[in-house]
Length: 77
Image (cartoon, rainbow, N blue to C red; front, side, top):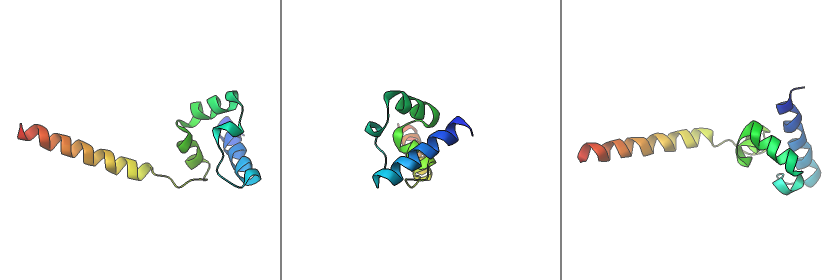
């Protein structure tokens, strides 16, 4: 089992035990730091564990729209 798999399992077990999405306060500082180091921001860790719907596609589209708007503004200047 890889380290990522270990922490995904830990997040899932905590969610099942608590009956809600895991919070950082449910874990030791060391575990929180390791989880964030492996997955990035806390919501991304929850997404990777399958506990929260991924918003990655939404983020990508939003960023594309922002870049296109910024490019259009630069062309107008």
